[in-house]
Image (cartoon, rainbow, N blue to C red; front, side):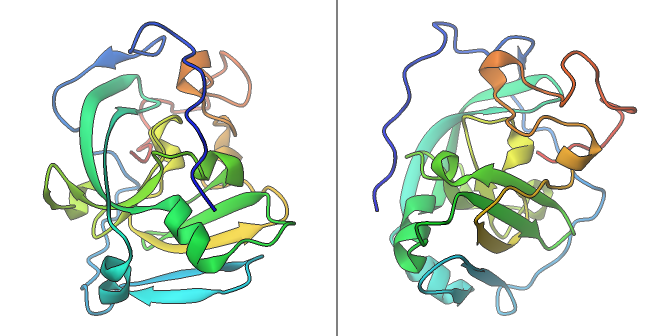
Length: 211
């Protein structure tokens, strides 16, 4: 299985509508930052796949490693350009477990109780990865370490921090923010922030949106 080709450019402007560029990396989460020792860290990958696996940290690092530079867009209206990530490409994960033909969606769970969902075709884009380094350094707990999901072409809440479980599904299941009124598709270029367009959920910008 190979990564999907990059989609056609949807805007000549690098900054999506409604966003502002920042030069730091703001910390936003659920208020829980689990400390997971690397010798206890596991990533369970299962569901509608031929070869379900549970990887420990050493096994995860033994997979082919991937470096990518991408832009990062948070639903709370900030973007940072040229984020340098290193980890395991999602299509490498797919090659490992071999999704069955009925698999259409992916559900992510985190060590802090967070969850989110994406179509499988979105996850197979060539810039989606499970990152364990940022700017050449191990990913800190502030930013979702030891490992987090990066989905550059979606708002950042679609990439789960503190990742612990990936489930391939034959249907869509809404995640933590999706059931609370955030968009299920989360496309920054169409400013697709909320399930009801232009109707922010109660507490928007006060909530700790995961990014």
